[in-house]
Image (cartoon, rainbow, N blue to C red; front, side, top):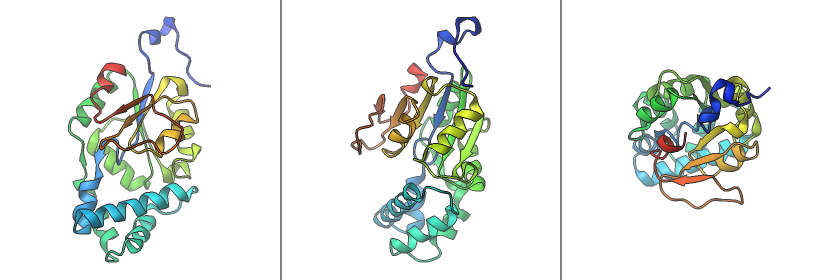
Length: 216
């Protein structure tokens, strides 16, 4: 059962009971590390787009690290770059202000991340942003990659919140329809101003996370 807001528990004074974040794009500047490991921005972007194509098309979970390696080969990179990326995973850096914003939100609602990642790397990356998320849901744990519904459903169940009162913070266009399909309002942290890829529109389309302070 989803948690229902009521004036008796004070939830009527706030719009959302939880905020759920994409991790590796919405909260973390993972592009910079990928580019550095690849050796150039062009190589890194090509590798990253191959990785995104493979994960979004994978559906059922298979090893995240294998997909990253396959993407490197498809992008024409050296066969050891995926291992280098994993070895340097702790160098991932949150976007400016991301950790502070998450900490502020955690003071008034539940917070979670749902990420297309392995359990090991997903938990490590989440800890670089904030150490006390209520839920860290990885594709490995959910058994499927986003934008399949299972990762979002598992996260909502773990939080015990109603989708309509659970704000999802997307990092990419593909995450918007996935969360919207379950009735979750979506805030797209659209860092570079990309166009939406289909008819699913976010409730908010912002270049930074700053507006979360006003609405969540």
